[in-house]
Length: 300
Image (cartoon, rainbow, N blue to C red; front, side):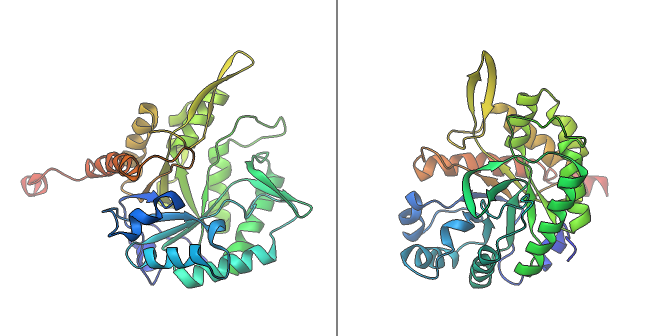
């Protein structure tokens, strides 16, 4: 199944394609806000694993809200990098969710989180090797076949590297997308965090990503901390977006054009107005891509 960008993304899905506009993550703290009239936001994203149950109030709430917003489903537990392969039961439950809600986009992380039937509460990094790349591509193909959908894969934040790694992260992610036919979810906060932690240039990462493979962008806040006397950034999704990440978003949009941009916030959730304010900043970044009124007429 080949990934398509631009107008092809909208054409690929039957119901409510996710627009190239700013959206927010739907969290239970804000359910009432969305049920009571609903805020003026272009689209919403949910963590898929929160809705894999066959019924109940949480699923009913999402169904009520879904009628008013295009939807993206973002997974955190599929473990695409697992050498053991994917869990067939998890895939079946995810397929049921997708069939029920018809999200415009479906995504997962370039990471692993399961072993021996145990689920670990983290998105663990992969060694960037040909062997790991082959496993990732195999698992993406399995997921896309099982789900009947093209998915997007997200570049992770990281705090350690593997001595065995031989491929730069940006090349690893792009090559996985090319070989599997999936798309990329470009998380610019993760780029900034990892670049700081490992001492490379975030723009080197950004400039190496094929823009035609990008189907969605994430932004979020991060925490500044220290480990063994060294400053470390943690991708905690618990604060407003830092200036360096806004600047990187501007650079990403200028290079690859307008894409759906998701404002993530998962820790210490603020009032919805704060979240919407961050989304409005992302929308302003998208709006800056539009030509000034009359400019095209003048050129013509």
